[in-house]
Amino acid sequence: MAKINYITHDNQTHTIDVQNGLTVMEGAVQNDIPGIDADCGGGMACATCHVYVNEEWLDKLPSKEDGEEDMLDMAFEPKQNSRLSCQLTVSDELDGLVVNIPSKQV
Amino acid sequence: MIKKDVLIIGAGPTGLFCAHQLGIIGLSCEIVDNLDKAGGQCIELYPDKPIYDIPAVPECTGEELTNNLLQQIKPFNVKFHLNERVEELKKAEDRWHVKTSGKQEFDVASIVIAGGVGSFEPRKFPLKECEKFEGSSIFYSIKDKTVFKDKTISIFGGGDSALDWAIELSNTSKVNLIHRRDGFSGAESSVQKVKELNDQGKINLYTKYQIYSVSGENNIQSVKIKHDDGETKEFKTDYVLGFFGLIMQLGPILDWGLNINKKAIEVNTENFETNIDGIFAIGDICTYPGKLKLILSGFHEGALAARGCFKYAKPDEKLRFEFTTTSKAAQERLGVKK
Image (cartoon, rainbow over all chains, first blue to last red; front, side, top):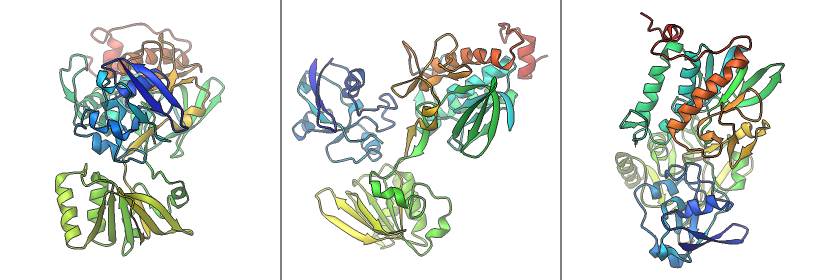
């Protein structure tokens, strides 16, 4: 279990206990956090679960698999700290993770 | 006006198999899809990726699955209306009138929405000011490349469309290619070609830049781009092209009065009818307790929705349940009767 902090575009912080093994995307969708669409359901095929990861967490995340960077090309306003939240699997190490949700997904 | 028993919206695997099930029970249908080919997400998102969970098919790609389904519905001569999006829906006594973006009109007894996660539309620039130039000097697809001759074109994106058009247009236009990182998702050979053309001065390649602003009166005059490190550059341009792939949007279906829950249409699990009589929803676009977004679930939903359509198409007849192994009627419809 890890506490994941989702900060929506209007600066509201939603802190959710997410079970290990779920993704950061699933944690958001299952708890109705606004701003994560996840149209393709975690298939890394749509770039609508895009988040900005707080700098101090970037190195602690699983590294990007082939295809995530390609998909991020399609995201709305990608930045260097952009990740697809469907690729971030929650574990104890991610307790306290802070992700910012962009103003739009498409 | 085309008169049929059923109109299917969406030519993905679920819509295709529903057409088969309609054919088996003797109902006619046509299919509308916004893409230029049948297959839906299977063809658009993962044509080459293997799928391992189609019952009795240990492994097949999205393209193979689509081709097999098309083969399976061949006996029913289903007509497709591709590159068209359904726009308007009107109740006409006990039938439905549907109009598409291509001005095609249908008169049907029922509608099956098999729209996946919506219709595929090009992903656009995030800047609000880009909207007013769209269709005049900003494009997300190219219909007539001759307008670009001897002009300055700024292309954004790093996939095959962006690379291919940059290469192609560099023959007749001044091309700037702008991409947000050094890596490209397009074919390696195209990447090499673009780099060669950049070395020869035939393409100006800017990586780690993204669009920052556009300016101009009726047409775009210049575009400003911003580097990852904050530095900006501005240059004159006649046209701006963006190739960021496709997104999926529900579009006009949202305005039809259907019960929508988290971008999906609520249905019953008896025949996958929505809250509106005669409108069914199957596949990824429908939701109900326990919904699984699997292709096999879409097949099941399509089979039941097809039977649900029967009472609207043939209110005076009773549908008898039959197996294709033994039903003479079904075999006749399949054209396999000995």
